[in-house]
Length: 55
Image (cartoon, rainbow, N blue to C red; front, side, top):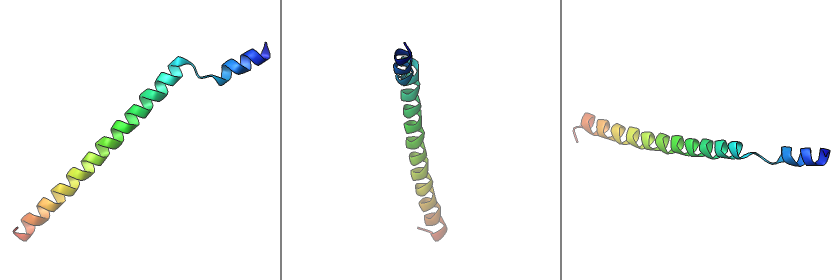
């Protein structure tokens, strides 16, 4: 009986697995969004530098 309880405790439930998948997807989307914001910031900095230099 105790071995059955321990075995069940070691297996994540479906809800937890879904939560992990959702969390991983959210983290990935946050990373992608942060990378895109960094690219946009870089482009904006280049444009401003060009405007200041009269390019």
